[in-house]
Image (cartoon, rainbow, N blue to C red; front, side):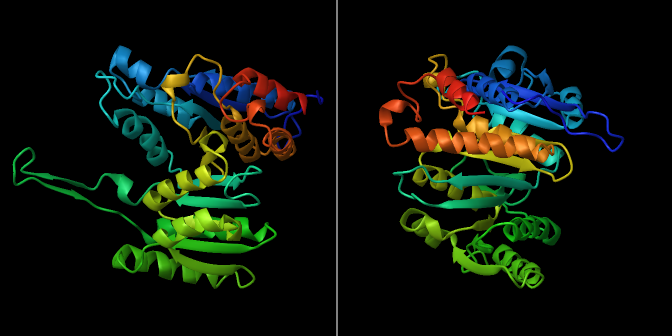
Length: 358
């Protein structure tokens, strides 16, 4: 194990990273435990506080995210979340109450406007050889809750659901994409939207993208309709470097990207407000059907922890974890019995194998 290290403050004193940990529901606590194990093996000391949030808490108390807890989370350096959500057949937790009351509320309240999802295709997957980033706008679009019902429950019922897009919100997301592209070999950014049908929001996105692109003349750019991008993601994902897109399209496109790159068990994410408290979580859900069996794939949670360390300035440790994950996946992905996907090798064994590489 490498020597323990911490980043330092401007006066040279060790800096303690205060991380809020939300294990959550289902397999969440299991994969978070492995992520923290790997962080420890990388030599980073975190000061962690565990928070009981998710469907289980809601069932016991009727609370989703109390204001007092939100304020505590706001004061953390970062948040590591496993997974939250009820069982599909749970009558005590209404559909969407946890997603809206916890995940979306944290994104909106902490202004986590960048949803960054990195993808590196597993050997033998549909997208073998692909390595790209998707940046999804995380605080606007169709998820802000604009809309409502008229004559609900009657034959004349009407439901509306708006999509809110602001110049400032689009620009800061797009600009972050270009900034990331500057440090990558391919140096290319794709905008994905549906400008031929969504003529107002699409026009705003397209014009903003063009304006920001003019400031980065050395970055290649391209545009695709989202339906065409779905085809490209399956047929030739290797062509992508950095993708920027809106909240709804990004939600859908990144699930597809996870599928073609090897599976949802590899998909990590960072909900970022650069320079401020940010949240890191695997993309997968609570997977109650395999909870407690010790067979959940912890790789997405471990990679999410690496993103968290990078955000905290622990870049060497983050790079070491990322390399250890890549080495483990490369060594085992050609052998299904090795258990990279949920299967014969236990969750803890995968965490141990990655920690040993550190």
